[in-house]
Amino acid sequence: MSKLLLDVKHIRVNYIGGYKGLDDVSLVLKEGERLIVYGLDGCGKTTLLRTLAGLEEYDGEIMYDGANIDGISLKDRNIGFTFDKKSLNKNKTVYQILSYPMRLRQYSTEDTEIKVKESAQEFSLDLNIKAKDLQPFEVAKLLIARLFSVERKLYLIDNIADGLDEKQKEIIYGYIKSYTANKSAVIATDDKEFVKSLVEDDILVLSDGVGEGQGRLRDMASRPLNITSAALCGYELYTGVLLKSQDKYYGVPDGNEQAKAQVAAPISDVYVNKQVCFALKDSKIQSFYYDMSCERIISRQ
Image (cartoon, rainbow, N blue to C red; front, side, top):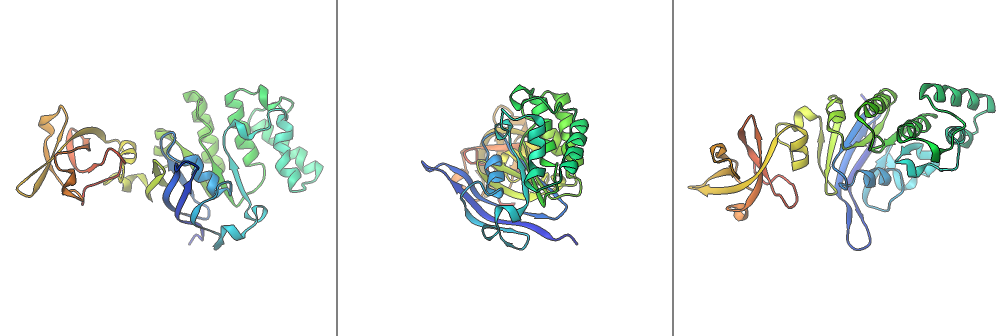
């Protein structure tokens, strides 16, 4: 049975001005497994990865390899992380960027040369080009090559395929899936199709800094806990009115009276006669529904 590597409980990250980067996020990760963090722009994916990497102050608890992560030095954590092109020194060459993690770990000159050349060949990179002169697709490949140039205990991969065309994304996602196979990794993305291709991996859906449960996509589909996860699972989403009659509740999506159907009771009757978000599949309204202001599920069952 796999050992628990990450056990994150009730993480909160607050910024000046009261903005909440993360609001009560919990997750677990076993050794040799991947966790996919999915959400739209601004939902907190990068903040979560930065927190796990030790780059953000937080409230809550992060247990890493059986110990509180705050008591483990950055060096001893052996966590590799990659964000966007801003994390690259634009005036360094591809060779300097690829060789740096090896030099930091005092690899021999011979071993460094061999590994750098292997990486350059694998990712079709010119070792003499400076980072500032690379195209976005080359930057994404370089970020992956640098991350996996040395062995890490945990890999944190942000949404590095953002802005690429579909063919380029497919190649980058192929690299990520190949290089993280049987490794401990947390991968952040806003790409639905990429998430759907990882059916055996756990997914954590973030919405406005809140993580609503962790699990596989097929299990999530029966009752998605927020609007973002419902859309990910393929539901059609409509605003509409929640009605009550003789202790029964009904949903009426706007402009679709024929879809009116009985739904589950809400967590509070304060939602009756209010606009909520309903989920439909095959033109049939589902029993669960959401608060549009916070995206969270508000039906009881």
